[in-house]
Length: 393
Image (cartoon, rainbow, N blue to C red; front, side, top):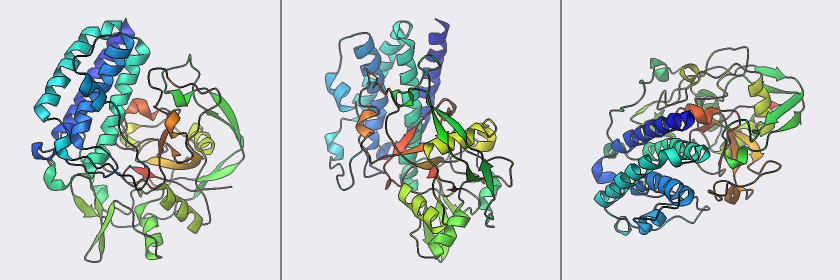
């Protein structure tokens, strides 16, 4: 089928994307754990192929396993509650050569099966891998510079605007009239993950939304008033620097600030405003121009954030340059049904402890930047590329 042929090419391209990321890690660092709450790097090298194997070969086509131990070992990531960090040691994991042999055989056998795989499952395989191209970027960001290859092989370099040191003035707000926000997808409309269904409308009262995300320069005033510095900042010799993917550089005051949910909420309260709800974000986005990866900074265009634009007619960069925290707790839409082949994708996180993020980051693939896509994280999680903008009623 043409759709499957196209999806087969998409899977190949997604593999190339994640393979390039893994090659940025020096061979002697593959058993490091850059983020304490996540697995060691070696897990992710095996996880992507194990996921595809378990989904396509085992679930869809009922092929016998050739390595049951790895099918299970590399099956699931972790999201431990605060204070429950993993305690495994490097010696608890198999050697790289054995993992690579598993990966090679898995890819070869899956490629022989692609013509027989349901289109929905191929979409899942492609998007799951592209999600990990982003989540592994968070992990790689926190790997010590000396443990990764410092010549980025993908994407254009950041422009010179990152070195500006002039704070961007607070932008005015855009008035959003009352109306309906359309959330989610219709099952017949397009591929989506289980938490994206079903499409429904939510009435939204009139409100005003900031034209731009809150910048480092704006947040710096909050820090100077006594707030803690964000995770991506570091102070050296009385000056603030940004910890970029491949180097530290002077804090780019005109770029969006990456913060935790609780930091975003505290700043909004300090300003006498609030964070948008998921429905308000949709309402504002529906009145803005279509996103452009080059201008808005998503689809692997850059490694780090770029400047927010100047004065614009609409709210800018609603998609790109950093996911945006909303005040909405991650919960199912009406009529939610978990995927039978991936029942733990969404449902375990409907626990009242995760918040919805919308938009996209510099490392978000374009397909995942669709309006219906929902991201979610714990409010104290500091590692992701998440920013925010203010709203007022």
